[in-house]
Length: 396
Image (cartoon, rainbow, N blue to C red; front, top):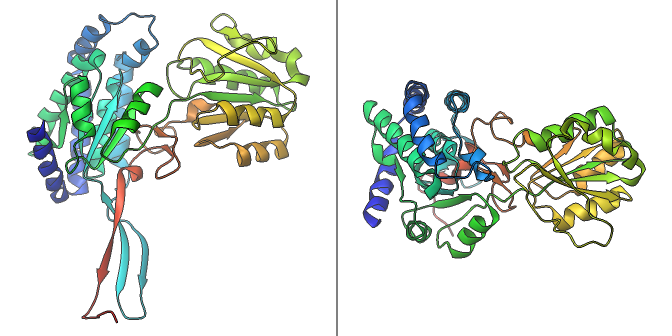
């Protein structure tokens, strides 16, 4: 593994010689190659799907379709069209002694990403890393390895066809030993990002010797306030819960004000034939911290917005939360007091996504507070350095 790390570290330095026009052209050509080679990619994906139970919540995350490949290619073209984050001066000043200071956006260098059963992440990570001047090491799971191998082979072919080094992206074996090697690659890996379930994220955080940005699991709530609009609520709750149940922005728990319990059947009507409701009796033991990733929904009746806020504080994961209300004061209070990366008023949490935010693709949703928070896209794949120009000044 050390030789692989050396190669990718060296390749990361060569990216400084690639200008933004070359990066954009490579991503456009790769988007074309995804569609040209879709049958090859789908066949590799079928090999992985055959090894997984279709009822497994991860099955939908693993699944590639012609439509999803089209979406991946479109997101890649969007990334290519975005302004480069590199070289942007975020602070600039001249000191009294004449020193000229600039704080400038630069790549991290080598970014390692550890993820589960999501082959689309391989494309997303590469496009964002390459556009932002970073090399990347991909560590996927065993159940997506055929898909990931086909994807990385296609990326390598496209890079070589453009005269660019293939070593700017590498796929590690889908083993626990490889994960340990990546987490201990001090001096080679500048940043590691886990993307997956709670156990994966906790393992990476607890065992990494390289810097880590957490992309937390999503235990997501919607609060239907006493002043909520029923028509809006029906659409928002249904979309947040059923659009894709396996993703981290899907709704897990509906909180409803006690004065609106009579509206619950109407509120849930659009998904009544799809979703299994869990509404424990008062005092009954229940796991309110569960991220379902399935057609299951927890429901809790609350006495007030205060109780809703207390519940979210106790059981939310800091990912995405929403309130459905026509009361401006309640909306403002909810957005002010809820401690999460994304806080919505009268809109579903399904919008928590880098592409939906106009950022192109994303590497994940950061739920931590130190460093990036929310969708991690191009700007979040950069750090900065200070550039100081002088003319012989010395310090007293």
